[in-house]
Image (cartoon, rainbow, N blue to C red; front, side, top):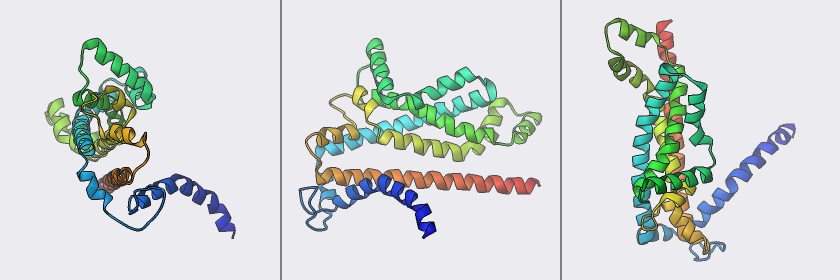
Length: 264
């Protein structure tokens, strides 16, 4: 009884966090068009998504944006992490690099829209891609820096002592050691871009909205079973990304432990 009393707040917290998600998932299998009344199990709403041109168009735009933003974020975020950790450590630069990740989305969205207007960038999938890369770079850099700070620098020093250039050392020694963190940062950037709404709402073209913007336009007129089904699929993608990040982190920790034991 005492153990139940101790764990009760934890179970209440889990219920508060996950009951709404469970309801959405369950109602996505509801046979009724009324999303609030259960009338039997059915999978018919999932094929209906493929027949909706707006949803498929939003999905196509979202995948293009998320893929492009992830590539940009990984490339620039990794270089930024290396520069801040090894080349030019500075508290001011650290704050500037972290700002897009902690800044309110509405502030970032308004700032980007004003910048696009100022320099004459037309709103499109590319403008959303660049906007998502802004905060994606910050998240990738944060993840990679943690890995970089814990790396053994003796291998890099040995490479330099053997005559390798700084660029070759980075490509052949540092970068392979950062691979798990880069993969984790890429998955994080992709997932964040996939379901980001506020920045996309301000920087997307009305002709090419992302999937979250399409969902918002539908939800304004009421929740439908198709939206529940779509939310369930997005939830599945997010869970898969979390699992991949965890497995990558565990693999990284295992390899680090084996290397430490080998040196000992």
